[in-house]
Amino acid sequence: MRVFMLGWEFPPSISGGLGTACYGLTKALSQRDVGVIFVLPHAIDPNHSSHVRLLSPSNLYRDDAAGGNGNGNGGGHQLADELATRVAGLYKDRPEFANVTFRSVPSRIVSPYPSGIGEEFDAPASAEELARTRQLGGIVPDVPTGHYHGDLLADAARYAGLCVDLARGEQFDVIHAHDWLTYPAGIAVAAVTGKPLVVHVHATEFDRSGENVFQPVYDIERRGMHGATRVICVSYLTRSIIEHRYGVDPEKIDVVYNGVENDGTNGQPHTGIARGDKIVLFLGRITMQKGPEYFIGAAKKVLEKYQNVKFVMAGSGDKIGDIIQMAAAAGIGQKVLFTGFLRGKDVQRVFEMADVYVMPSVSEPFGIAPLEAIRHDVPVIISRTSGVAEVLTHALKVDFWDTHDIANKIIAVLRHPPLSNTLREHADFESRRLTWDDAARKCEEVYEHTRQVMSV
Image (cartoon, rainbow, N blue to C red; front, side, top):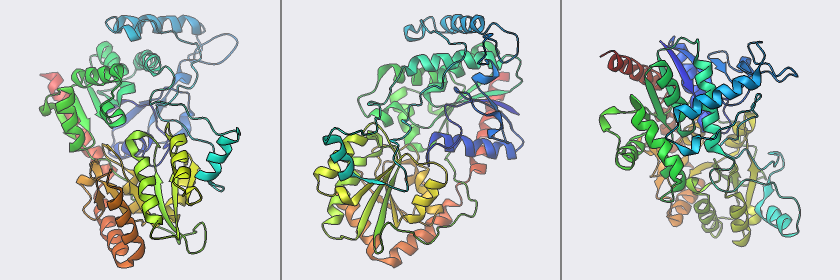
């Protein structure tokens, strides 16, 4: 079995992100002898991963004076024109894809997830410090506003053209497209190769934007789901949205829970920010979907009863400025620390510091970060409106809007070690059942089913 896999991210960019899911799934698939060709929209070192074959614009283009392409044939601009023509033909009924231009050496395409506010983890900035800097006219790291900065619709169309060209000459059995930015590419590759398409829904426009959906993105999602042979989603919560909001036949939807790397990592002794401080952690994109304002609301209530607590917000997003100001206005600026975007060992370090992890998401299709917290021996408090709440029994569950309940549960974990110990021990046992190998096995079953459907 060989899979032509389309994804916007591959290296884990933030704990629990789409890149983490793609990396974990492809690694497990490779261990099951499933060959994966993974196509990224931006140039990347092909040696970055040993378990998949990575393709990117660098496989077609070379940044040289001759304007040549990666095959050494020259004529990079001609190839760009061909891609533009091909995409225009495939999407002639979609006006937003009609006038797409290509560069002979495409620049890195902007991710829908802002890439950080630039603060160093070793020197986290408090909300009060950041707010004061802004008020004094100093430099505050700029984060684009809104969910869709840049021209992501054109980026998705460019990626579609890239994937069609890269698919030429490749041998594969099924196409697997992760999230909306890759759906146009999946449909295009399926149209020119005749191979079955599986779309993998990690989040929907309703998760990202609530009821204020961006219609062009919704339309792409709907077209991708209806155009696919099978639809994979990460929870029954997401399955319900796909069925009722997108009108997809439930018989073609498969639920495949995400996993976590069970590599024996355990929590280390807490380093702490100050002796005696307890650390409450929020880690994720600071966007409407993740409920950061409810974290701040709960923090204020906790600090009214419990002073030796620091609240660490790790991540970035379009609401970062509002949340900084909210914490400062609430008078808890010195108690809320912003680390900015974290990756790699810094993610591990922040988990090792934490006494409790809180995920107050408004809508969370799954939620890998709580599993990673558990893997680092940290008890978790999670929103009931999350997919991971379907599979974790030994986690404290809250309504995202109920800041009183969130605060009470935070205090309970911090003040009562037996509760904390019980949550850690039993949740760790539960999380070990959620493996990427199990997710890969179920995806492989979906692939086989699509081949059978196509052969009928």
